[in-house]
Image (cartoon, rainbow, N blue to C red; front, side):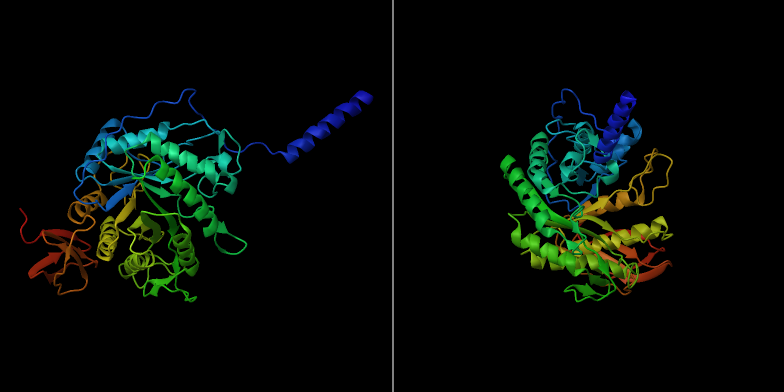
Length: 441
């Protein structure tokens, strides 16, 4: 009887302990016993002007494709060398430091090697953070929370040290964005962004990167520029909507308290959070110009980076022709307002899946319209190129021009003719047409 009571008591104690310390969450994270040496990467290709345009690699990119498709994708990207951005954890890269001091850069190395092979100008986004920096279990990765939890304050130094280690591993990378969309920095109690915590982390990362190489370029705060149709007294508004003042306040705090910055980075969608694209799908794109102008003014003309931009409402039913036409006009807004960088979030998917807006057909490699659009803008509208004003007889045709080339977009679903730059042109529904002008030698 005494033995039975003892067993019951021990079982109860173990059960209570299990209740107090729940089982670790997430999958075991692996790390090589002997980490591989840093990959051999070519220096970024020399470019006469900063390319301005580029892409962000996401979960499924060329390194997931068969060799033939990977080669086609590399050739497509290298014909006009552009920026190529990769996150350090997630979006195709594994946990870089599963446990304190144990590193696993295998998947990140693969992405960085592809960027080098395809002649990309490399950019790294320092997000996200290993679980143990966020209160999770060392040695495990809970991907369901990867993009929603920020490092705890007591681990800001650890995150900065990881950033420095990555900078040493990839010396060809000279541009870093710190974190992504303020993920995990929302204060639910006060219903505001915790700009104080983000800026504290940013400053530690900034110092760590500059210590590795003072030539490294660092930017933040990478916050989403949300807008609505509700006018709550925001200092920035237009026909496209009203900016959330809490976002503007967070940017203001970062600007006043940062240690330094080589550029200011944001992301956002043309859609309002409550009414979609207003006043219409093309008119809503003026939001990008308005925000770029505001950021340049507020920051003392820091270079403005758009880390992501989105133009299509959910379940839009858009054709690929309309989707690409709206993207083209969005890019015109970035160029006309003086954005230094705009990175296209490439939504590649697995083989066999529909892939609207992708650069190539998954598993096939056939080029899709967005790839040609990015190449054209990279070639003809890099940062700093002087823009030319041209006459347009019909405002439904949007035009961006420089001395040697112009691009026109029919923003309607019907064929139309117009006089552009003194010449009559006919454009099919949502057609994008490139036309040389002046001396094209």
